[in-house]
View 1 (cartoon, rainbow, N blue to C red):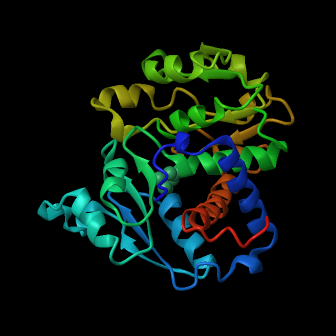
View 2: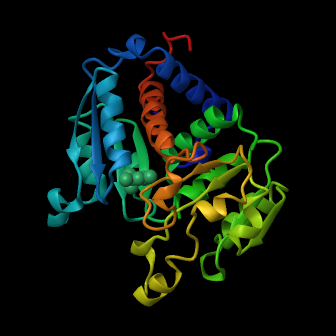
Length: 298
Ligand code: CP
């Protein structure tokens, strides 16, 4: 049985298939409206979410299926000490496929070993968020025409490391640099050119895609460090004036202060379209993991 736990679980060919299928869903919504009739998706969210949980649920509904689940650990029997393994074993009896977000790295992987139905990792701690990566790749493909090019960045770098013609410019303060294992094991191992710099203004004029993220308050050990670093980068109109006219600005959302609302109406702001793309690519993924894509020529 296939699960999606890490973006590297998918080959480049499988990613291309999902992105092509998602594009066909966007173009022919009616064709897919009953594909998952009689099927159920369970969303097990042990950590908060707006986009991922609701887009998964909307995806299943638009495929004609049904949804069940919980939106916080506190409303599940994990508060009584039930293990993740037991939880998925039980939910496998009620649903055909499970999307799980958990605050512990590795929890969805553990769940996949116990589950009788496909598990999709909807975010595990600071580790991976593979369906956000699919939404990011679909957005880049749709905005740029091809794939030239916290967990969202880690997953995206891993997935993009397999495409040709990539250069990464990693912009962060010293304290929030990319973890060493991603830099050495993914970027350097694949001989991908990269620079690490701290100034957004210095880099923005050379970028095709600017992928911004929130400073992740919930993963800091010390609140003073979060307060010191949280507003390091704020993209506003004055910084955007330095950017190329064909820049694509992505952000997995939610944002806090890092993109000023005055940027939202700029055609280069792709982040709301990116969230919508998340629904379509999750529709494609649900179909694929349930083996329901075979009868559909995208
Ligand atoms: N991008 C993302 O994962 O958003 P949510 O936390 O709202 O699901």
